[in-house]
Image 1 (cartoon, rainbow, N blue to C red):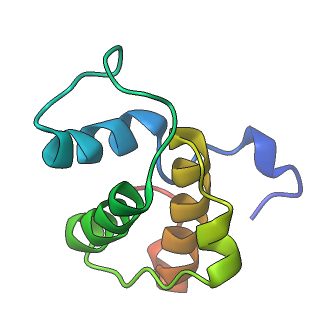
Image 2 (image 1 turned 180 degrees about the vertical axis):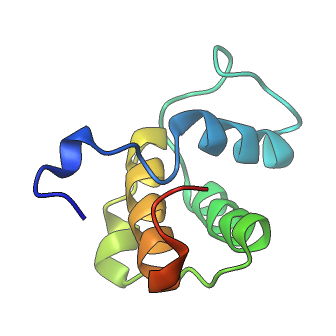
Length: 93
């Protein structure tokens, strides 16, 4: 991992989170949805990430409490996904 994490491609992009939420919300597009996410959506996103990538996503209470927006969800779930990946898988998908 590089020293400046800001220059790395996010593990989970905002567009992917919006796509996963569409499965729960009946396909609302990005312009129709609120930036805020509720507890049901967070649970759905964790489940969706596990299903899509075949990796467990174990979030702490602090991580869950830190998810308030779509961007927060992409960040927290992306970091959890990166932590769950085997070391030999590398950074590309």
